[in-house]
Image 1: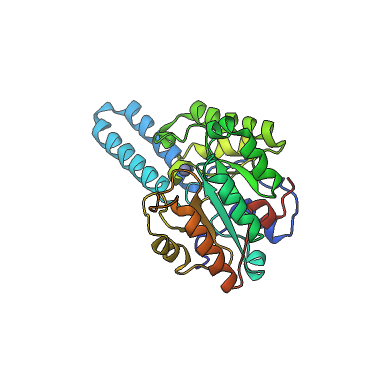
Image 2: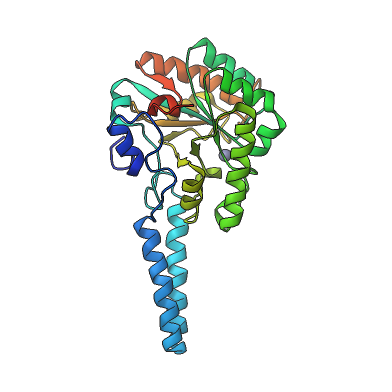
Length: 292
Ligand SMILES: [Zn+2]
């Protein structure tokens, strides 16, 4: 993976400078250039309309085009253009042969405990991006994830397909409710957020900054929610895999082989492959030296 889209912004600087805390960049927010330009475009459009309403067609076309651009950027999981997006660990982690293993959409009572057992057996660590209401339904599993040395992160409250279309209040509710539930279960506030399906709203960044969260995407995914052939999924995950990459799998809603959720077979194969390549799976806070 090239360095064109990797670690950026405050997170990059804090990691590069060896900052072991998590203060830098959290709580402060400045809009990405694309977002600033969009705000200016809207203001200019309204000013033009106030000056001469006959310009309505032109203003409407410009604003529709602007929203199309923002929507496209929000659907691009590796994009840095709507704000910092962690898809690779800092270079010092890559040099140590570390990759960040992440699981989305859980916890699931039938799958997550088996994933945890597999990770334990291989001494691997991971970050679990949990859906808030799943976490509330299965607090014992969330507690177990945390107790076994993994991190529990925030993947919204409902995992709504319309998440990226929510207004500021809706986004705040999704993020804050999940933060509170996970903190209540584990005693630790999540430090990372991933949007449902990786679809990101231009309004999300200030909400995350206020909640002390950073956005995490991924570098490699295997489409394990729709594919049932573990070797095909493994191929997508490992083709071009580089030390430092973030990998995403799903411990809930994964497709099934005839015998079991495909994620279990893939995880076994993946951990074999990582070991063969001299790579080690760790959680995001471990990689970045953040305190729990
Ligand atoms: Zn998800």
